[in-house]
Length: 413
Image (spheres, rainbow, N blue to C red):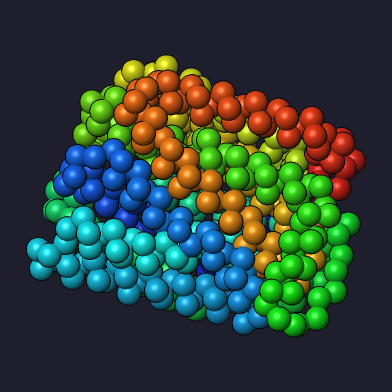
């Protein structure tokens, strides 16, 4: 399971990704709670929670930039930007000049590049990792994001409660600085392993033609198109309930405080970390496409169940299971897309996958009015039911490409 750490680049990338993810989660919790307390509006909370995903529209272009200048260099530039923006918020907090408007502006700027971070991580792993270790490496990499949800949430809640928001941002700046330093020490190498059934030779031309090449390949490869469609669906219908809406659920539905919110985030993250460990440990037995679909169905059912919970006692087990389903869906999806893509197109295809994250802000924008009009339980039921129906339709539509054990999308090496 730890074999990917034999690759030098991965030994530096893993802690760099962990530090970045911890900073992301601390910022999300700290600023989300700040906006909710300062404004008292669930509509503004959902709007703010959608800001980190503005850059999904730019993700294909960032993928193209990474294909041209190198994904390690692109990752360093992105993490340098996070460091500068977090430093601005830290200075405003210490000066007593931080308000909702300033938080919205800086979060919006960070959101232009932040959605592409996970995709760039995966592409860099694909460039430096032998093909037979790719699933295990992606699983271990996913642990950095999922464990950071719990660590970052609990740390952020504790520091804010004990020392205040200003010192919380000092920690966030420190995490970003560590991440940038470690990222500078990663490396790259040319990928020599086959990319699977889809092959392409792309000569460098105009950016639009290069993007069209990636779009055409995804459209012509059913497994890639199915994964992209499912990614948009889960971002639209499931992610809002374990990300942007958790502060509302904690305060208005469960009647708890920041510490309770941190516990809820940690519960979801704990399930996701367990999923990543399972995938890494059992990588030679995992059929990526089949596991991805089954986990998506389970995740939609758990979204339905979340609406029926009324307190921490019933909500925490559902959140743990939702995190488990999330990990079992997302990790195989990433591996499926990397294995079935030519190396020269991986950045752009991953950028298109990141574009599917735009379903999350749409889901958040729609959920605010629905919750205010129908209530949290009804909104959760509506989202989970619609998502489940669409997931089953996708399975029917692409069954021949996703379900058989010998399908290219279920390759295990």
